[in-house]
Image (cartoon, rainbow, N blue to C red):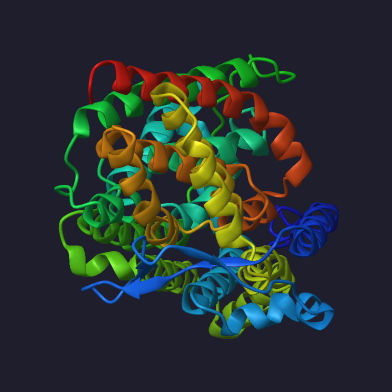
Length: 465
């Protein structure tokens, strides 16, 4: 048990691999600022105070390019750019996760909890997989949770390993499932809600196609996971039930941890109808997770001095990941400062004019997929793209409702594939899964899902959705 309780550890190999991939993307993006002419759309401020593209004023060419010093310092300059508040919140969120998980692990609460879970559910692990996958998909689809589920990823990963599977399966049952639900967008306030409001549609209208999408994507993901785990060595061996020595202090700590985390989940779920909570879900999760970790470790018998030491070590261990997140965030900054982001958007709009309706709806899906590589925030992307997509739909006789589904699909699924997404990088680091290993696992699912969702968009077009 001593070895198991050594604390939070993020693989240096996984970290370096991610850094190399992101640096290469930064270099390619910088090269594009020399190859693509500068341009920009006029912007205006709507009644809610959001900056959106002014389609009436249109697009114009402007001088582009980016000085070398700005590119070199872009991971730090991004902290002063638009949207930096969200980035800073993600970084603080990450530090809280690191500190709490290290304290829980050092105290032995993580191992104690997982041993009990494996002992309880080992015989019905495939049913547990189905329930966990559905739960995380529902969190993503009903309340727009994605970054907020990151603290739960290491728990699911450890549970997955204990059940005879691997860390990749754990990430898939949690973060990948949340991303799929986020994209299906049954009642996602950050994509469907914002996009429909900007397009002048009733919020969460046209729900039937998104419900059908949710069910089919869930079945695809669950089938893919079962196919994957059955190929793992020894996966058919059911974990044996073993007698676990109960510890009243540890049990008390786990009860308190579960109660506080449960309250946090209820608050996040409540944001679906208590709209004033939507802007604070990440803060709520961070506070509740911090409170749960401190309360549980103290109640289980850990001294305040040892708790502070373990918490501090967890922060130090996870702090290097901040550089990775800043580098990933700098890619959008490079494109905006180099004046090429709007140029690419304008080229896409120009291309759309020559396409048939089936190709056009798939092209809109493609535009959103490409833009999600550079802008991972669903609501930020909605303010950028919907003022372009909605008029495009009207001009070429497409349903605005269907275009919003295409936008949601393009925004969500690739969040769990693109190395520019901060939540994915954090989760992979906590799970000790390299990005290359994750990509090797998930690309097949992404291809299958791309075919399924493209078919759903064509179905929507055929039935007049």
